[in-house]
Length: 264
Image (cartoon, rainbow, N blue to C red; front, side):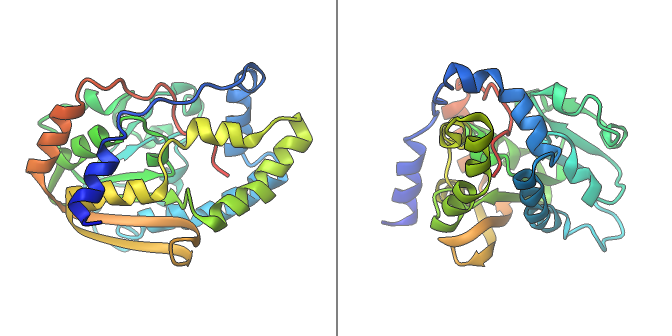
């Protein structure tokens, strides 16, 4: 299938609907997220150790740079990416779940907080737009990516790290760690939580990014696409005509009602 036909097929799946959670999972949703992000269980602690690769990849461009330029992070969660970022001129975030970062000691490093990318002023531009394990959760992903592309300054870069959702190793990894631990602790199916949260797989995300940007570099944490846990994409030179088309097409899609939660 050609790139254009492939992207058209993926676009036709949006906007997506998030599968509802069973009541027992709904009742522990927020607590599960905070435990996961805080590394409060053995599986969550292992996941955080592995996820350091994601954070390092996203921050690699500014680690040795004299200036980092203004940054917008999509799906900032508990602000854990800020621990990997040097102090810069401005760091804005998009995060709909304020409870996640309201008590964070890193909150002082944030200039402006938005609950949705639609709130970012059209005239504002960023040298970097970043995302760590967030894009797989967004039901109106084509709109968000298009809006991000139009917010990039000339020469700017989209830097996104994602789980290899849909791949063999990623699926085996969460089933044997977080999924098993979750079932032993709660007697519930972690796969239902993953299906609720990870509405996009890695192939869909990469297909959309490649359709929207002229230059896309991809790096995997593992052996290729299927035998990897994570994937990192650095995208430059947005196709602004495509971005405008996607933004207009999906402007009426409702924003996702929840942020990231079910990381392995």
